[in-house]
Image (cartoon, rainbow over all chains, first blue to last red; front, side):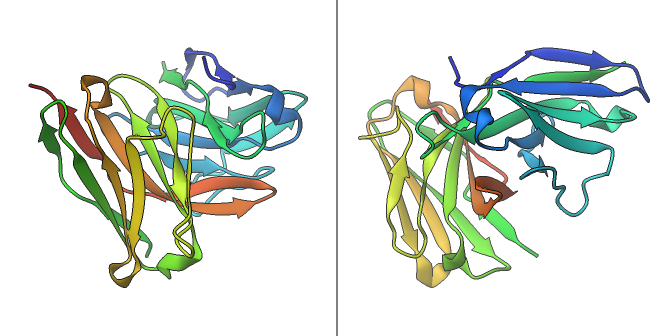
Length: 108
Length: 121
């Protein structure tokens, strides 16, 4: 099992706010990074660092950390946000990288 | 703009080897490390490790030592992943991605399109 734990599936009504979480001991010391992956496509970086969005990522995506939990919040979810979301961070040693198991987001 | 273009799908028999390429453009290749990520069919992302494109020094995740080799040809801005003694469980899409560092954490800001490696007799 991964050192980072994500809920396998989350759903949200169109236009509502959803929080996707990622839990792990390393998150007490390091930020999580978040990626979006749509079927048949490569992952796309959506949040990095404390709460930074790459160019082209809508501002409805935001990130936060509290204790051993990192969260990706989508404020006003859109149909095109339906995708798998993965967190990653450092592993327990702090020297390597580990991914969470991923969360499938369904927009109803 | 930054682009990572990977080689095409491969069909290999068990025990064979495969070499996947990842050609970078739009930036100075040796400035950023390159990472490799595996995704088995219907499964999540799995970090395999990375290679320092300046020194050629690789780092491997647990479970990716021995049969996996990362290499470079900096003259053509290309990173390679070679897998030997292929097994059915190596069947997956393999991604390369550029590594950046910010707020004490690495992130992968540009990804290749992925290369499907199928291992089947």
